[in-house]
Length: 437
Image (cartoon, rainbow, N blue to C red; front, side, top):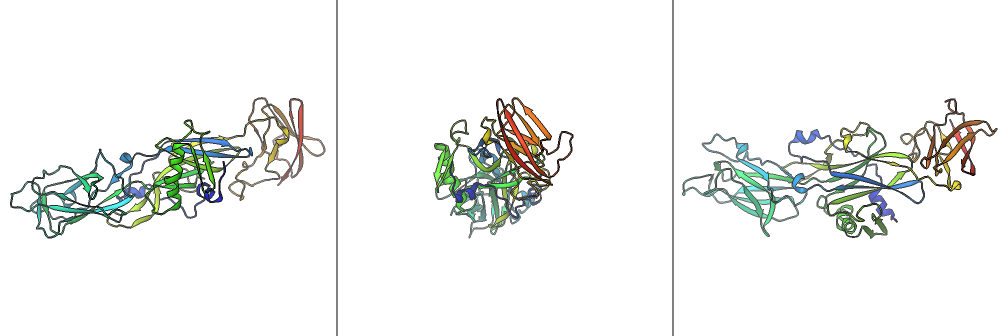
């Protein structure tokens, strides 16, 4: 698998400066944000790289059905003027998702409904033939589309009946229906309906069991979310189609091949994937995929810039939805080529960890690790004078052996040079390690 620097920047771990998803409570406080759902069937495959030091981890999940994830806002009809009616102004109309169609437009947009110009006040509901019809014109605001239409809620309309919102040209069904209570529509009456599809997915990774070290290492905005966004356009227009048809994507000097890690050899039609190229040997990784949306105001055509996830991810705080983690332990396979055995970190510096020292992520905290050891082996650590410091043996073990740098009495060994001897069957090898305290 080959990756160009450009594509590595697209997929690799990125600690997004200033990224702070809003807590989920913001959705209910504003009252106009999408009810976000977690993605379905998140799964993980870890693949050891040829260097036997690192792993490529593939995160798969199923795309959310638009029929489930879509939400439309209740319209603000405070501009209507019910005469002789006890119906509150904010309940003159209602909106519901059409079960036969769903919203397929831009991620966030608004449809404005206005009383047809030049007409007199109209009555919604059964009235005398002399009453003018209450005709509403409707048009998309703030979207790429130029869609308009009209709805007749005057004579012959039965209050409470749903009216599908279909705009021309092309008879575009916007995937929701409006219904109206009986009352009069003022000649200047207007209201807006905000429609949303969730904006995309965030990918997080951490090693702590409580998720307090989760970092965002990728983002997929839905294809329509940011027009002209190069990464999103590439992902939806090129990467996904190729991986769904053949399991292989090649372009921009990059090749992604999932044929060996996906049970079908290619992505399903409803599957998405993200790749972590920066996983290392000997860690238990926890991955998380969240849906996110942007703050959105139904009365404005401007898209919000701040983002929030369906479950808040806050640095340094345990993740409140731990059941959503998918976990994998990256361990190299045991092997019998003794010259390939090495110790890491070497030199070992006490007190260093992935959280305190730059580029320390590929080392376990407070441990020294021997890598590529055989399944059956005996490991001994000596001082240069030949005194036994520590020993360990395994008969059906993994390709790693960890040492906490304590001697056989449980005391931390002093700074200095140490010699290790690894024996497997009739073969053995020696190596040197340095400990600095």
